[in-house]
Length: 178
Image (cartoon, rainbow, N blue to C red):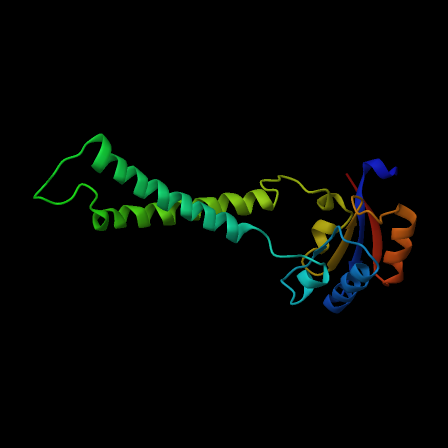
């Protein structure tokens, strides 16, 4: 299979410690574009793969600030500029009355921005992933552990990467078609 039509190489392990150690060794060897597929969350696997914090919290913060400014600005504009109405001698810019809607729009915009940002940063919605076409992946993904090194990695050379993955003593190594 040519390298241009290849998503990467995937190694199958039968024990969680093996895939965790494999990810650590691969990271030390210089591989950066890799992913692991496990039947349950594993402590330390994200760090072994070299994953860093993402920007969802910043996106949520910016969404909240935008929502708060939008809510407050909308009320300020309507109460003081567009339709000034003096009721009972209160000032036109009566900010305590603006707090509930400002708070609600802050929460709404933050929640929507966080959800949309999480989906965008995860590359979702993605209806199919090339790893799903790996032989036996669908049957064994509930009991086995997988480490995939993607072709987009700068160090990826098909033959050398396959030799490296086989040195980790997996059950099997497969090519993942693109």
